[in-house]
Image 1 (cartoon, rainbow, N blue to C red):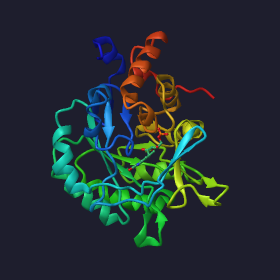
Image 2 (image 1 turned 135 degrees about the vertical axis):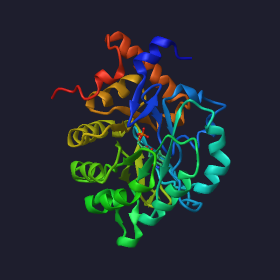
Image 3 (image 1 turned 45 degrees about the vertical axis):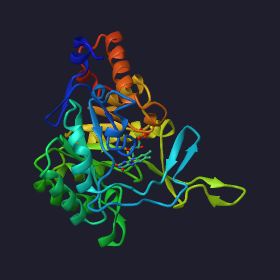
Length: 309
Ligand SMILES: Cc1cc2nc3c(=O)[nH]c(=O)nc-3n(C[C@H](O)[C@H](O)[C@H](O)COP(=O)(O)O)c2cc1C
């Protein structure tokens, strides 16, 4: 239960979307939201990004798909999802009653895939904005990742932008030498915000079988282990653009969230922490409020980008 003074301290907005607090559940770690309704108060979080949606259903990668690493988790789910049309028909109706902002995470393997998913979502109500997961290989372009090439990324965002009446967030990958050119390419092509980071490509090995512990070979590392690198990337990206930045990577407490805001993020997302505490986004919002109260900060927006190096 949030009280009025907490609401005013935490309330913020993100590219025109009003949020009761800046803490959002991250894509792929909160299903389609509805599955968590019995174990968490979905209205306690500022927003919820649903599992990545593709034009057709995807069965995902062979098991094992998860490995608990030191201070984090490696996953290779393979973007399993029910497909955008089933999401609109079966999941979205129950999400419309929430005050929480619902973000649809969209992905594909060719620009036309992204465009088609957006077209289907445009006909539906109850979505606050889109988050493009660009950490996918462009199979029409030799398998180069959209997220690793500023020109490819710019072309993708330029194609999708005019199709979307809602704010467009571009979610960047951390698996690049320099984040600034990618952040700038997304902004120049019309993104309303960027979010980062997605997972770090990684490998876990069983020394006895000498095989990967992940069925598909590599997986993506997330959780507390990545937080210091994510903070650095969020800081660098926020310096490179004027649009809002959403920061994520290993957040598990209100103070972790505050660190990302100080680094330059206007809002944060919480992913892996949901696996051990499904109420994490709401709890983190309350902890952030307590931090603001103790620091005598009237509103969370005052924190954004206040890092001094
Ligand atoms: C099991 C799992 C599934 C994920 N699926 C998606 C996805 O479908 N789309 C996406 O953009 N990110 C996906 N992610 C990445 C997270 O949204 C987030 O960017 C990443 O885990 C870093 O945040 P964290 O350390 O708080 O988990 C997934 C992460 C995990 C752990």
